Length: 417
Image (spheres, rainbow, N blue to C red):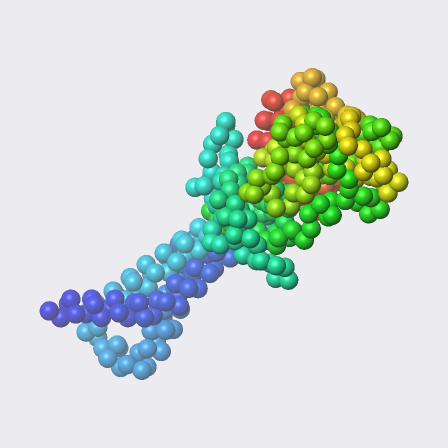
């Protein structure tokens, strides 16, 4: 029975004296691997662990003379084996951690974290994630509380976004959508890696008046509403008293409206509480469009336009008007996109990888056009730069919009980004 007892006593001594050698071996293994990429040899770990354990064991022997007894040889041998096992295991874990730890850690990289793969759904070959609002939608300090209907609509809404964008960008996009769709005065959103969002929102501080520019007046008039008209469209209203140019503030299509100038049918009590006379059940913001907000369906209805004070009188005196929507021109970015696509090129958004050929260089030094047959149209190095020059610096985590053929973009992404 003495040998098993000595072995147990040796395990106790090994655990007691092996803690410090294990910690030192693990820390040194991590530091060497992280900064130099070199793994400390196992023999060096053994020598170091035995040296530190010898000091600990000597101090222990001074306090407990029974440790120095000759019959304690099995216990001492077992303790040495336990110390070496602890030191080698700690060194292996430290070495592993040093090889996997990121070499560059910054606040920017923390903000660029993305969603967990567990919440990503593949839809049409692209990753999508549904953001779930957890808990009750909170109130913003300094604002009145939200209505129960608005809280419920926000919490029960379907909020789906691309899964490959940083979480900080997802928070911004969700806040923009909530602000646009519910006319909120302010929104604060926090999203974790599992696509769970905590939302605080403030109710609108104004309805129609908040959308009327300074120096303008909002006037409603019955008219035949064009299909697809939306807030922000530029229109010309023809009345017997004259022609008035204005900007659409809101519009409502109402097939039941009186064709001789009567008011539209009574609005649904469940409709948007911001709607006024001429307010719209279906309207969208030109500055921040949202595909989930419909526009007018056309037909008889009422139109509210923002006009100057002098132009308000003809609209107020008229029972009915005719509406002409004016063209706002073709957006040049759409024309550019069409030209590039007709030439067989495609856009792609990529990120510069750490340690790649673009990391720590400039666009001119790499010469991506000659080497990869792609062109960098925009680069985000702190802030977005359109058509960057050759001296534009690049580093890991920078966002790029590149143009090229599909094959060239695939090769560029595999090698550089």
